[in-house]
Length: 386
Image 1 (cartoon, helix red, strand yellow):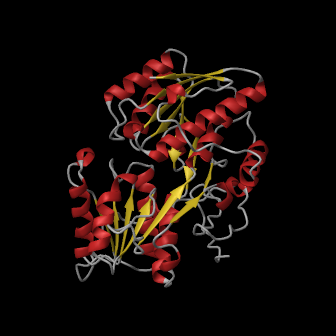
Image 2 (cartoon, rainbow, N blue to C red):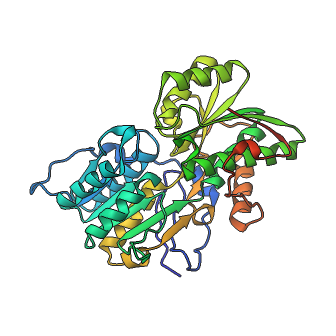
Image 3 (cartoon, rainbow, N blue to C red):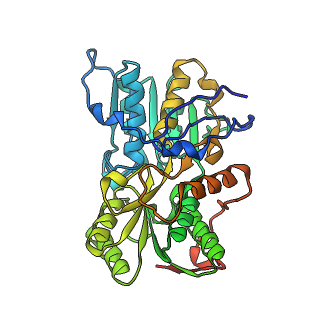
């Protein structure tokens, strides 16, 4: 068994990471999620000037804003924290052309990081794969971390051992969020996802959300309605069009929308605030961003970045290089933030019991989402794909 690295998750759990093919560590407990820490990354500047003009730790953003209060920012916080705690220089890079960035744009950002002296480059998002494989082959002495990724190979199909991929079981925390809001008493839900339905992580979040809502509704002997859409989310950005759609949902009876896509949150939270609706946040605890947030489906992206960077500096990167490490509830890497949620009817004890059932396999959440959600059928959910 690999040594367990105890970290404080943003969702306030222990994150213990193991590479694929090794024995899993003891499960973290959901009860730890009742603690409420501050976020020390907020006190660390996003930009710094190194004395030699070199930057040892680098972060290349996914599409969307760096400070998206979600996926990009959560990962960046992990990089900053490791740098600050170990007195290392750091810098972030955003590919040119924003939401329209090409693989060449991503490669150029990664290569710029290497040219500026990066020893480790953390890349966020599944869209990085093609550029990341190219830059890793060109720079075999540099280590790369692929958050929300998979194992990459060269032209001969040999694994790129200077790339460590980390993936998450987003369907689990999506399930917990859907289950929780239905048990809370809501029966008209919504899901707005980023990436236009092509982002596997967002797809797993959404599919898990519907499964959780369905199982909770079944236990209550009721039917739940869910609006489900990828519209206006292709670039994960806030937009008037998305806000208008969400406002229409709320005004027509939707009570809670799962905002699953970076800065899309801003439009959905604004619509919720104007319509007395509620929001489920994503990736990190978004309760501080709006009083409309009743809970968040969370995964430990920042902690995963710290873990992988640490493997470079302790000389054990080979343990995770060339493979994908997949993390879920068993590793304490997915869950809900009980310290900050505003749920009143679904209790922490009920949540802990559900969490434990996911950990021990009593509750199994399917991650094989259909390419077209309109083809999916659920016993206690009426799903309207928009």
